[in-house]
Picture 1: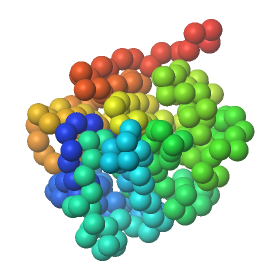
Picture 2 (picture 1 turned 60 degrees about the vertical axis):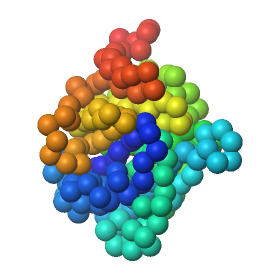
Picture 3 (picture 1 turned 135 degrees about the horizontal axis):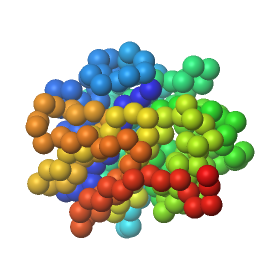
Length: 237
């Protein structure tokens, strides 16, 4: 269910991460190599990046309900979009969920950009009026925003305990931090000289990609990378 990618580092073009690599998100939209659930990701796509031209870290987004491979206008513009922090995704909708631009990641609370690769039962999530769509990923994103990203590990562990069938791979960024969780699906990390990539699967055949162990949290900052286990929240059994 879905493929996504996050970047934190030097300014790079959106195209260099999504479209140019031999197995980038455009290719993953119709021929993913590691996807365990679903055959393709044709139910929309989105990219968010942080803009410093207006002062501070301002999240900008471009989302669509159409397949990424058919968007010629994005092909034209993506090489001109540059940022130090990017979150992008292609979507395979959970059965029964709407196919609409508002259901495509990344979601935002005005500060963070967040993508969910996976599935979760909506019944285990607290009701919220701030979700951008009725789809499971949007409600999960709103739940995480309500709890705060500093509690991401605890939130994912609690939701995973409530729904043992959930797959809860998250990417989230605020311009200075990039967070990722591996819970039930693949997550890979690439440490480059100019920054760090977190992705559902490698976008090329470089031997420098490493797999993140399942049920682990990754935090990327300008100072380095930390990977820690996701454990049961305090007070739970």
